[in-house]
Amino acid sequence: MTILHKNPKINKDVIRSRHQVWSNPWHFLAFGFGSGLTKFAPGTFGTLAAIPLYLLLVQLPWLWYGMITLFAFYIGIHICQVASDDLKVHDFSGIVWDEFVGFWITMFMIPLDWKWLILGFVLFRFFDIVKPWPISYLDQHVDGGFGIMIDDVLAGIYAWFCLFMIVTYF
Image 1 (cartoon, rainbow, N blue to C red):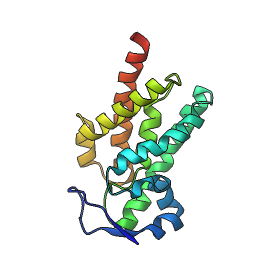
Image 2: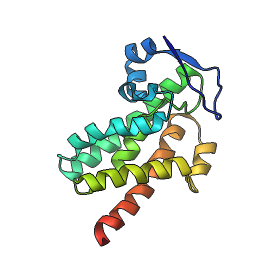
Image 3: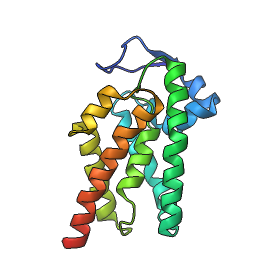
């Protein structure tokens, strides 16, 4: 079975099989353990798929959480580059590893509470979709795996700052 993703920013004829995602470990990670295979809002579903791993990460001391997130960013550059090269499309919408890392950045050192989790999710998706400057600039001008990752990292930082201020002062 093949999936056709429609995204105005990419070639509408890109078709890949589910088998490729499930059989290639780089694609499996890039597509967020399969969450990026959805035809509708793969970034949102990728962020949702990041929540169970966040619930494990948040149990760790903040230093370990930060180091694992930094490692996920670093390896994510390679993960996204490999998937992008194989698909021959830059920043294909089904590649959602960047959403995982961006969401984990959003939730860094935020108390574990469902209201903060939901608000962090909403804030991260907002900044990832709206892409205020310089996120939009980097999204359009930086290529490769780093380019795929950096806009979500910045969206995560913007969302983290807003969430941190709300948690701290409200």
